[in-house]
Image 1: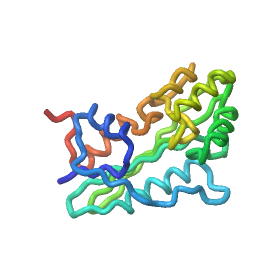
Image 2: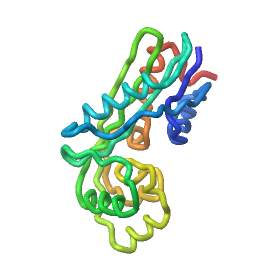
Image 3: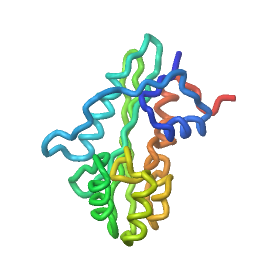
Image 4: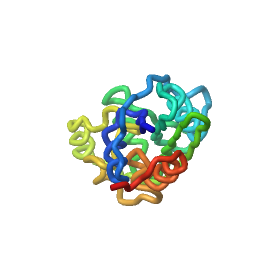
Length: 190
């Protein structure tokens, strides 16, 4: 039985390591992650994790783990910013208010697909021009849902979180351990 991580995220590899796991292979799926017209955040995350799990090639007996993290303000999905201008717009929108971070995970075996969505809430402070310019200069906003990663330099912008920190980073540990154990993968093995 092999554990296949359907993600190219180094953070997800690190979180699996905390659980005592090293993926046997890493196979990021190539799917269209654009939201459908009028698609709401939770159904979007559910659709994406299922599509990712189905898109990852696997052999009989393999266990595939996929995840997706989405930032949402109300009904609006904030994906990965296309450029610096969009990242600035996202961070300006998020500044001074609470928003949701939804992380979905899917574990696929030969005969079933198990999914969970973990919702956390965070509050980002309003950024000064110096903070915004400094953060943009780091480039850390690139490839990150909502234009930030809470485990990076942007972590200084969040005075309040409610929920799972590991889910906000990209992989909820409790739910991941539970689903992998249900699929026959031992966690915390020595």
